[in-house]
Image (cartoon, rainbow, N blue to C red; front, side, top):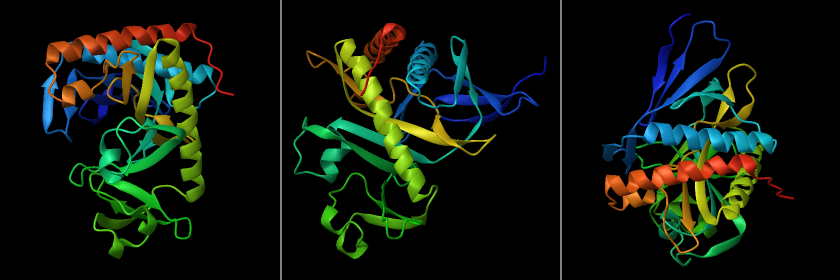
Amino acid sequence: MKKMEKIAEGKTKKILKRENSQNIVKIVSKNTIIAGDGEKKDMMSGKARWANNTTSNVFELLSRCGIKTHFIERVGQTSFLALECEMIPVKVVVRRIATGSFLKRIPKVADGTVFDKLVVEFFYKDDELHDPIIFIDSMNPEWWQLYDAHKPLDIRNIYKPEKNPSYIDTMGCYFTLEEARYIEEQSKQIFLILEKAWQALGVTLWDFKIEFGRRKDNGKIVVADVIDNDSWQIRTKDGRQLDKRVYREGGEIKEVSNLYEIVSNLTNRFSSLSIDIQ
């Protein structure tokens, strides 16, 4: 058997590929937990296993619900096989409940406000710029405007940079307006599926972030990367935070580790759920 070679490595995972593998890669999770654009970093024993289990359970649920993803199958405690994709450097965030950086951009909205309609935002992945928010003008969609995600936005003048002090830059697009709409609708569908799944377990999904990529074999855009306990904000009915926010806010590694294991075990129950989002 030919040895798999590393073709990419990020902060929390690495990508392996075997020669002549026909666009199939192995995604291996790492025991690394990070926050603040990598400024805070720790090793957390067991994280790779819990992250892979959570991701695999989520992708298996999405597959049963008809969502196209890059996921093929889990192949070990810390890895799964996936279709090789060219990743799009954009984070898609879907929000049901207002919290975090959203409150800095839109300070008139109170923390904990529940949105009747899901809020979808695009962020350009760039540590140096601290992942600025993207706005796409339908009249000029081949150019994206970037704004500081942590400063107040004047939404009324969002396409008038001279009137918005949080404006950073304008850049070329990574997908068309039609593709942007597809990504937005897919992201909403995924959120609704996971929202229902977590509700069935007595947990509230506040928001999540996901990523998309173009399949190397046919160029189609699909959900890619991972979806694990780094990807969302979830809370129990009594308000207990179960996700990476606990780590961001100074939680001890032992406490954070316990939460990741709890969440991983909870997602094992996804396989028994029947989700209807109609």
